[in-house]
Length: 508
Image (cartoon, rainbow, N blue to C red; front, side, top):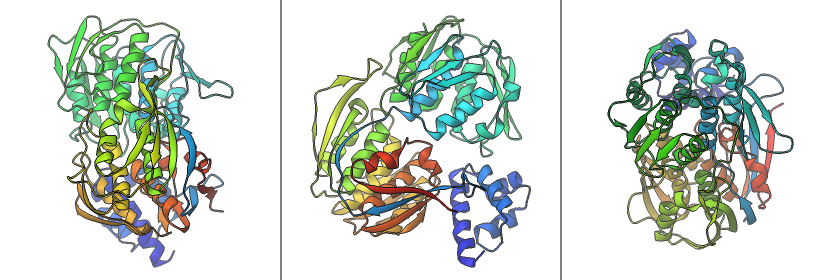
């Protein structure tokens, strides 16, 4: 292994470790080695066997390498061409994974229509199947049937699959109803003191669930009970709201949840729970009143609504390639702040009359983009809880800002270190300056150039780099795109139908 490759792999491992929120010492414990060895690896000063690279990839939930015919998937992009045509927005990844967890509440058959067939869904299905749940894709469709067994076998859970999806945390709410004691794996050495986990525990504690973190597992004890007073969430998080909803769904009596997220995936979960017979008042607001149903045994069908993050991805593709395309089935309620922000930057687009999603509730439109020069935002762009600008849409504004005249500041106050991945745009010609772990300055317009880049180990920044390559004249290569496949179904093929030239390949 050359010094250059050692250094490139070392940087990739360092970035993935930081993304997981691990110290070098914590990663060393997971690998059974020393902190100094991890430091040498990240500095490119140590040879690595394929076995060690694979172990690091497993610990960090990132496919640095796969041995055999199913090795990492890469993309070859011939950029510099405009797109044209129409494209439909797929159903929501985040709603889909919540509904898969919620299906555990139901003893009857659950059929999810038009579910996105993505790697994140595949990992959850592997976990469900390992516990005895029967799952079946209906022929020639994206419809999935789910039938639970008479008794779940949590002790047989597929630990490897569970560690590759952060969704496993949302099994806590559904499983607490029928299992007094159980344990769940968690990924990446996350401990209960982190901001992404502690709000779940604080909320679920009110309903009788307690959790102890051991070596790589949540050890759970559950004595479901009604909360005598409203449960106030310490942060307005999407997954914590979903978890407490699923916990309250089968507890008799009334549970009041305050500071709840009213975001798109939470609304989809609420609509689904209502179809199961659970009473929910306040859907779309920050106060939810849940009337539980102790036994749920119904055959139910449900279609999750369309994904506003994918809609934003396609909108960014149109902007960066200066293309006029029509994006159909855009969930407008969850895009209004983003569109208003883009209008202040000079973007123009047409919007159709509204029509309903298959769930009967979410409002959709068709949106046609009209390319024109953009200027930098007058103020910093930052996310807020819904109905503010979605945190997952913020990275696409880095790409859009790079096409605009002037300097734009992005402030990602939510995630530690995610902003660092936006500096990968510099490899394809952008001017992105990292001010600190949360803020970047982007100077535009950009003269995009082709490059070979290792895909960042974060979903949205990975897609941002891919879309930038669509605008870069020449041939670019984006390596190891598993993280993109976790959240997008057939993205390369669908962009090709708009006129892109993207080839999927693997190393021999």
